[in-house]
Length: 212
Length: 229
Figure (cartoon, each protein chain N blue to C red):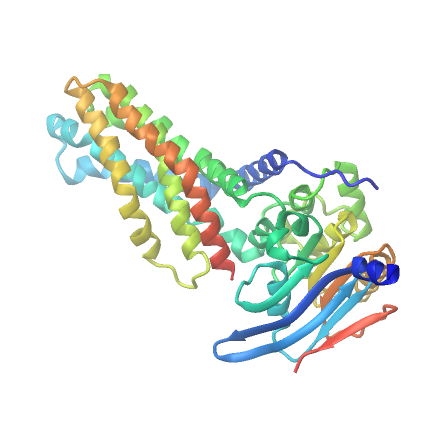
């Protein structure tokens, strides 16, 4: 009995009979899965199969679905504040303003969730290899560097759930390795990750969700 | 690591600061509405008549319409770049009430687009030969009225930010909502010139401002959620 309870406790995100339709095409129906603490879930599927839509459904950015999404047992719509305090979402559009510098971008996006000092911000930028660029405006950076700005947020974040939409696309080999290591550490600390990518992930205990 | 959560007020301040910083770095966007206001207002004497008496009659209306058009011109900047680069999604996914974050964006937007127009209005009023005793009235009505225009415009922008080609639709949504403010603003200037007391008219404008502050960010927030869908 006790074991069942702890098992329930560890189930972070639970998706039940999810149905989503777009322009009269059914993207997915009767989709059920569970994400536990310490798990990395990779979502695979062909282009246009609804991977991004699923992530946006879960984050509450897209409400065009039927079914239940719950966060530690509560429907996400009823525990929004708690859910959003524990969530980092990085989408296709990475949320990096072009006229601001990496430092200013990171300062704002992190400050919505946690109190953070400039030293911590600079440290995070250094770790993603952007030290020396912290005062350049982001339109002067390459796409991969802008991606790195958004990923530096993961280094600072204490959120438990990371939802990443194609985070590897513009990264170089070293960046890919670093991000993989980051995902491992996060899962090791009891966090959970949902990630869409075509890239073969080398992460222990990887769960895969295949889309048609 | 101890997780120290951010209060909504801090998130509000951070958003306000960020938007002011962006405005400062994109000086074009900051100066455009202001220049537009000056240009439109100075076209009227050329187009209608340089006769001081006729100008004095239409001055308050001209100034208010110019301010309205200038605010409309500036509106599109409010959410567009955030929508395009994904910052808007980050805003929607913050744990804080969206009302306050949208309000922060509105305030920052007004500080760089509405406030300069209000500040320079006595100068343009002088050019249009508005009686000098009305300068203060004009200034104060614009000071209260332009934030209402910004707040109402923000609803229109939030509704249209996801559309590919916006064209005139923003004006079609926003201008009808702005008409009551325009009427109240110009009426205040004219009627106080005719001897009416300023307080009553200002009370109407202030009521509009408080209503807009209370409800417009809620409407904008709801519209933004639909737009990113």
